[in-house]
Image (cartoon, rainbow, N blue to C red; front, top):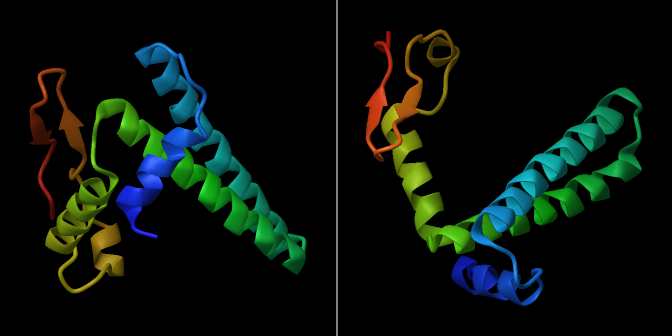
Amino acid sequence: MELNEYQKLCLTTAKKEMKHQEALCNWGLGVAGEAGDIASCIKKFVFHKNSAIKDGIRENIGDMMWYTAMICNTFGWNFQEVLEENIKKLEGRYPQGFTEKDAQRKGTMIKWSGAGEVKKVGKAK
């Protein structure tokens, strides 16, 4: 299945008749909740040696992607384009792949203003 098809299919299973802000809160909190479920499953897999829980990791990843697609739908964004933009950003930041040296860099947080402007805070080392 293509991402754009998945994004459209998510709409068919979503709650209808929500205000924009309610929908955004619902989907955003859903991402956070599913991410927490993934973290819990990983903890149980690693520290409790529960190998059966990896199916829970897989299921919760799917749920998190559903909520993420719904955030894109709420803003009218193309999910495929969002992911392509992310890869382009990361390829520019880590053209040789991530290294331990990259983990030591400071001041590379990106700050978004309310006007849609993007600026880097500090300097990368």
